[in-house]
Amino acid sequence: MSAKQSPLIEIETPVSRPGSDGQTLFWMQEHAFCVHLNLRGDSSNPGFSEAVTAVTGIALPEHPNTCVSSEHCRVAWLGPDEWLLIGVHEEFGSTPLEDRLAPMHHALTDLSGGQTILRVGGENWRNVLASACPFDLHPRVFGEGACAQTVIAHTNVLLIPASDPDRDEALDIVVRRSFADHLARWLMDAATEDGFELLAPVGSI
Amino acid sequence: MLQIECPWCGARDQEEFQYGGEAHIVRPEHPESLTDLQWADYLFNRANVKGVHAEQWCHTAGCRRWFNVLRDTVSYKILAVYRPGERPPGGEE
Image 1 (tube, rainbow over the protein chains, first blue to last red):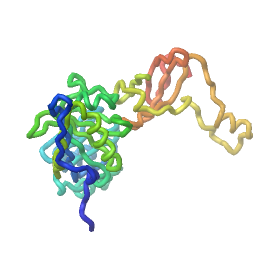
Image 2 (image 1 turned 180 degrees about the horizontal axis):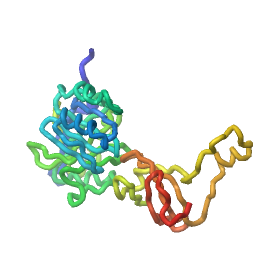
Image 3 (image 1 turned 90 degrees about the horizontal axis):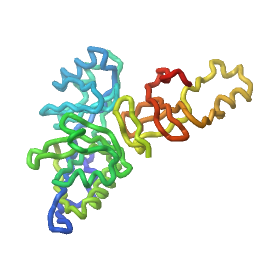
Image 4 (image 1 turned 90 degrees about the vertical axis):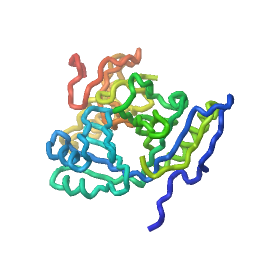
């Protein structure tokens, strides 16, 4: 088995490039190698929701565009019968859930190698993203407990508001592996004026 | 640019959606009994209305669900949005 490689391996980190007025108002950090599981099934089937709660400790969010978090995992609504489970630790595997869901109609797909998380923040992160994202990121309509699938720079993404333990308010961008490099470079370009800091990737949330 | 109300996700920018043509076209139950002309009519011929048009959209960059939209093709105004399987409000088709 070959070693895991971040999709942003070709982008050198850490980098600090202050903007035109010497300030740094945007930062970005990859949270690589989280466990991503795509879950599909019928949440009106009581056994289905119970299985998810038993394994994750989280009640399946049934309201569109909401996300529930616990210490170990996050569950984001993707569609009326579709969710994304993001596990913080590598031990968060699909097997316990697969075992419980086996008797019922479902699909559980491990996407861990297929997508990554870019965490962005800083004073001007909303302005930087707004230049290529049609979604309204204002805290009035998009805050904690929400999530949204949209596009940034023509790339499909899932946005989850987060709070970074070291740097306060942040946004997690879940992006396909093959688009991660494009998106990261695009954001660096968009943040040139505001000044940005690219932090060394970390392995968990 | 249109702002479309996804029945699940709410109002989003048109950039997140994909157009899927006229809605409520039913596939003939016994295609083998149709003439070529009738089959071609089902496959290719559309109403192309000037005015209120029932059409399909998919929220491709969001929840990836199909739904129906009543849109005025003259003013581009969206009059109603409804889920698949539902009848268009007002009884139009």
